[in-house]
Amino acid sequence: MNFTSGDRNVTKAVNYRDTFVMAVGKNVIVVVLSITINYINASMVHTFNSHHIFKLNPRYILFIHLVLNDMIQLITSITLFIFTYTFHTIYVSACCLLILPAIFTTQNTPLNLAFMAAECYIAVCFPLRHTYICTVKRTYVVIGLIWTMSSLSVLPDVFILVATEPLEFLQSRVFCNRDSVFRSTYSLKKRDASHIFFLVVVWITLFYTYFRILFVAKAANTDAKKARNTILLHGFQVLLCMITYVQPMLTEFLKYLFPRGVASINFVIYIINQIVPRFVSPIVYGLRDNTFKKHFKQHLLCTINKNNNR
Image 1 (cartoon, one colour):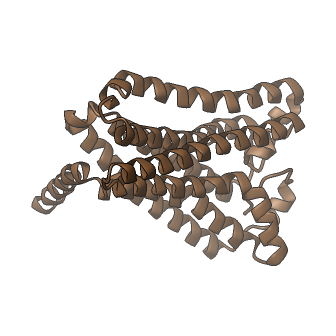
Image 2 (image 1 turned 90 degrees about the horizontal axis):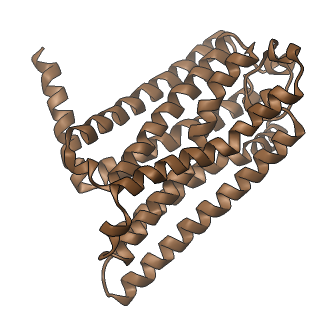
């Protein structure tokens, strides 16, 4: 199958189809990974909802929003993955319904990480003003701002699609990816511009917060190693998310090097781009944050004990 961007016709996509055994194997791997990650993430959401202390902390609110965002993104991308293997082409309207949530949530991730880094920076560099600046109400405003920014970068593509494409195209079947549906030159240029803008803003935020925390810790002779490592992990997540933006060029380059391995290249890039970043979030807080880890372990132990007693 073909996950590359650009104007790809159906014939070309079908030519990259795997054998039946290979297709089943890839789908099983993807589904097992997604179920595992979403089970862990769902357990984290339950842990968050079960303890009022987390609902009063902006850091955990932003974290659980990231987890929920990852769950939505994983469900929509896995559904799209299975549909493309099963049906190969689907109607443009159905493709839009699947692809829009995937695009929204993919755009949300780096923005959410940037705000989490900013919250960490305020906590370390302005500890006395942290509770005043980072309130629960403002945190939910930030979450609304994240969704608004993602919407403003994607929804114009829908209007361009309706305004420029003939009715026959909207009723046709396509191999479902973003550039097959939003294929206007305006949409492609706007997509590239918004990607560059988001990446620049996010990376400036991460670099600034990291070095400010580093300098403040040295000046005060304190250890802010955990805060710095958290921001480094955020940077690693953003680096993985960046594959989304460079995927067309990366895929074409790998196809040039390995022309017979198109299907395998697309699958590996899909795993790295869509699944691996969703696995990093539980590690950042579920395993590194002592407070959350304690309650999370208690929830898992209770679940295991209940299952064993049945």
